[in-house]
Image (cartoon, rainbow, N blue to C red; front, side, top):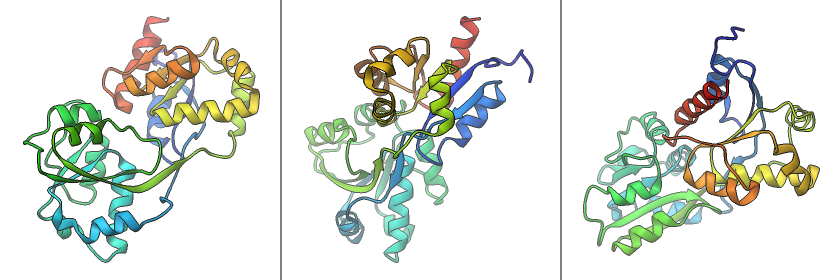
Length: 267
């Protein structure tokens, strides 16, 4: 492997949801890094489909559908199909998405969103909403627990009627992968990446159970903590007392660029 590559010689621990880290890991490997994957998030169905099923049965009542993650897209459309409906059911519903990745997931269903906010965060969606939202009925399929409330609060404050329905749930895995455990114990990790607040929380939970919370901070002493954006950074600050890198664009590509910049500056 060429030592000229920007991330050559760096070992990066990637915390992502199970099955969603391969593309990010591949791009880091292509840039010269040694990547160790540590899934800190498992995605599964919500505890009940009832609320989502009722919303899908009454889709024509809604003015807008807001999708804020690829998981939201995947589970919403899987349920739509399971109920014997297709994308025609959304003919009169406008769709807003948070983030480019979410828009790409939507594209796989041959749908182009009516609105993507300029920044890939919920706050930007509210601030730049393309029409007066007062009096509009909005469907928001989302994670069952632990999601941010800002979007619902602000849209409601502007007069929208927001119907939140659980479309999926995220869980903490039962154990740490052996490779990740070994790398943390041997202190061979240079950087840990976090792409959501829940990955930070579950990483802390998993390692605190394994090593005790005091030891976790000791293991992280010389490791660079890299975050995808402000909310994730906030959680890092709360649990680890610091964050060393924050992506300027709140995407995995933005996080990759931030890692390159950091590695270049630290040579």
